[in-house]
Image (cartoon, rainbow over all chains, first blue to last red; front, top):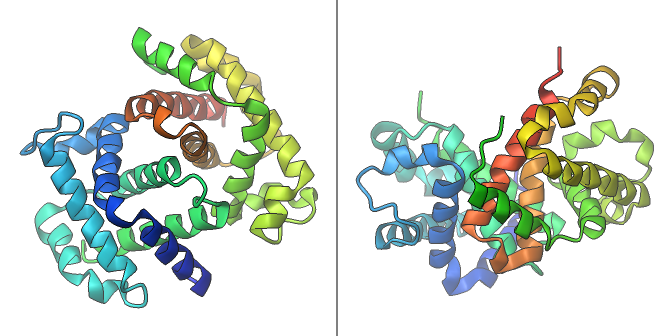
Length: 142
Length: 147
């Protein structure tokens, strides 16, 4: 799966529109993931998982910041995310199925906050982008 | 079998009551075909699906989406026996339509995105969690008679 020029433009535009809210969106997406898919909480036993906790919002900002880096390097995602890819492969070892769950909740979060921007083509491009990021983050697993 | 608490059932009902089923069905099916283009394989008789705007504006997509969502809505009246409620549709999707059940999961997730887009802050994380249980239950029920 390759991100077309149109996909890249869509992803950049919607992420820019989200602007300073991306950290909040990251936190909300995590909240949604933990509530809808409780098995995902098994990776966060060290955190306070009360919905909206400081731990969750802090971690959501981390995820959002990493995605901002990714959006800035759409032509070289493996390069830009190499360290994160190492982290997930050798330290975190989050089962690949979970990336789809968080990605889905990120789409739901964007849809609810940016309904006018979340057109069908943008929805498709964001889904492709998150899927590509997920593939990069699990690429060194074995 | 889907296990919803009384609170979750109530949350599903109140969230769903805010959805305009006639309006949203076409958008859900259209977005499925745009975001996951391989799903177009089931709709070769629908005419022009060549672009996102063609898909979203396609009258057959709109009509069929409405039909699908009405059927889903009917299922919400049978949360305690989704397998029974969708038994005939399950047989149809297996024996006549030959639809891989993975497609039910994809449609369910697109429905979640469309509900979020329309309901905005009303589609709270708690509401989503309850609705995710329902779409998973419907997908499982539709796959139940496969052989």
